[in-house]
Image 1 (cartoon, rainbow, N blue to C red):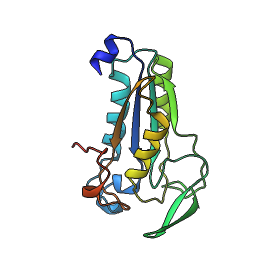
Image 2 (spheres, rainbow, N blue to C red; image 1 turned 90 degrees about the vertical axis):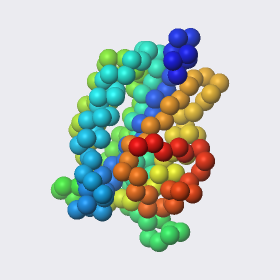
Image 3 (cartoon, one colour; image 1 turned 180 degrees about the horizontal axis):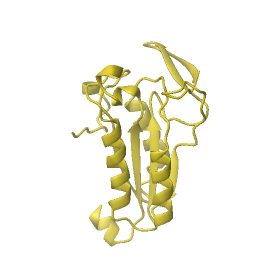
Image 4 (cartoon, rainbow, N blue to C red; image 1 turned 45 degrees about the horizontal axis):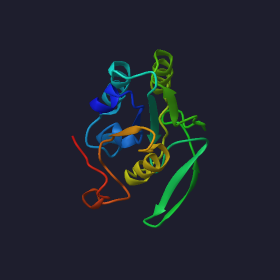
Length: 175
């Protein structure tokens, strides 16, 4: 990445952000409450990363899939998912999402992303699918002929769809 920046090659930074309730800890099926610390890390990363105004930052909140619009997915059984309307975590009101968010890595672009992260309303339902959102980011935001892409996955690592040990070799998890 350093060499690419020195050559002014454009960079794309993609943050896959797990917004499932397990991120809120044991009360919701998770191992630790990392919701606020993950949001803070994401905001700090966007604020402090030294990027070029030619770079792009993309934040993709996800559950079973990348969250967008009014409908997500609901897992019925191991092989069946169906559409489900999004409702908020706290008030159970229906909600529509304008994500994923894609902005230039300018001061204004960063401010816009940070505002969206800080005002994000967590959905009430949703299981975690790590592979699906990664494949979405890979197919939509990776173009090695035009730019270098770095994908970060912010998650508690609890995958409800895939055996993490057997996930595609293109995924490399680091704590």
